[in-house]
Image (tube, rainbow, N blue to C red; front, side, top):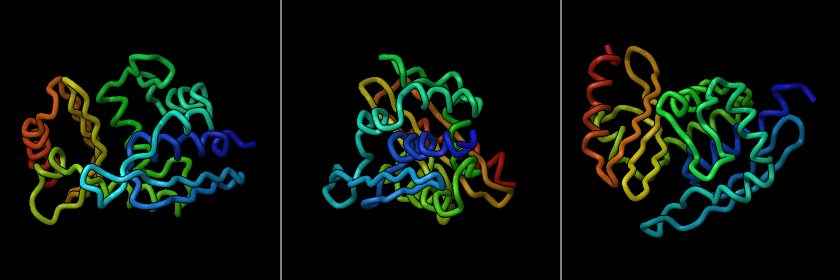
Length: 188
């Protein structure tokens, strides 16, 4: 199997399980015949699904394969093989960049990835800092004492990725302010 085809399922798992809010049942098939169906769970409001659980997906493709793909794309500071799940803004931005550029993804998978990120239900961070009508896809992560948002923004000056990792639980305003500052600088 070609190197790029071997890593394709791993990127899809990362996209669907870590960075994308599933908007319905998704059936993803890679060029090498890898096929996975995801059935969403109800969201916080009961009307839109949330991200599928990560554990079964990691079992399916192998956590070591996920970490190998992260190293290969230049995001070696991320890992799914430890209890602390290390992450940096640079690593998260690099992973989002790989997804947005469609690295090792078919055109259909790339479109699907974009649609998933645009359908994110939590829009209080990066998207909230943008002017009305701006296009942004994002994925949030919140835990006790942590609020993260990673996304892409389609600006007049070109598409950019942004990753904000905060040590404040469920506090969105600083992320929205950082997003606004990035837009003001990069949307020219």
